[in-house]
Image (tube, rainbow, N blue to C red):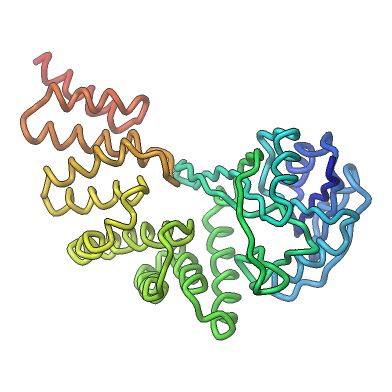
Length: 353
């Protein structure tokens, strides 16, 4: 059995810390917590679970704090968690098997996040690695990277699933977090003038509803030679599309999506949004083809992108085209999706007149 240390950095997370640590307390892992200046009772809660508690003077650099926490671990294999992440599933036997099979790789956990509107996003995050080979880089939205830049490595999925509630917060907290992230990102732009930095700057402007600046930075990110298989690139092209919708630049967005469709036709979120652009421009048959394709895909980030969202819009399209029977079939495929249930009720009301 390979010994593992769970490393967590925190500040003023008392209301989340107990749940986070209680989910891992019975696992054969060392728990290391680094506090960056809590003024609530976070540390009092941490002491119930571990005595490996350390302080780090905050300096607007998450990587430095992460690397400090890693340096305080007893073990070389590190699993990084945040205090707003709660372990849901873990298969220890499979985890150790994967670690032995990929001794020089980085393990990627499965994370589910819910936003204030109730939408659930699935992402895969690099979190398990050997500290003798890897460390964190970038002051925010930090990445696990090799200690030596010429090191070749692999990324592999590990059987760990966590629930993330960091996006469920008050509007004030969300804006404060976005403003903090933006401040650090804009400071680091000169050191990391690359697609990932510009993407993350756009991501900070988006929740602040500064859609014009989000568009500008997304387009700077898109100007690089990008890998469609990279998760951040997939999120970039989709979020860029939603920003263009907010700015009512649908025709421009559709032209861009037509141009790059061949590279992202495996990604349900992209295919669904491509169809939505056709829908918004009243090209209903093209939209229907995209929606049907989206329902056949298995790679997605937002739950519903390959199921009830395209099914609902297919229902609307076929209802407009005068085929209520087919429209009903698609609405019924949406399950408990509230807009589809409402459409079915309205159809029933019309039939009963």
